[in-house]
Image (cartoon, rainbow, N blue to C red):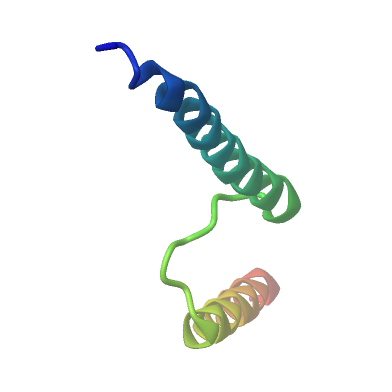
Length: 67
């Protein structure tokens, strides 16, 4: 009678395992698609600033190469 809690451990273990599998799947799919891990807390503003910074760096490197 004291081992009745074992009935709940198996389903809870399966649920926890599947949550871990899905979390890791999202991580590796995003990394494969974008080449880097997802930055937590990135909103549209951060994405726009990354694009702007990348564009500015490309312009600067092109200007330095032409001189």
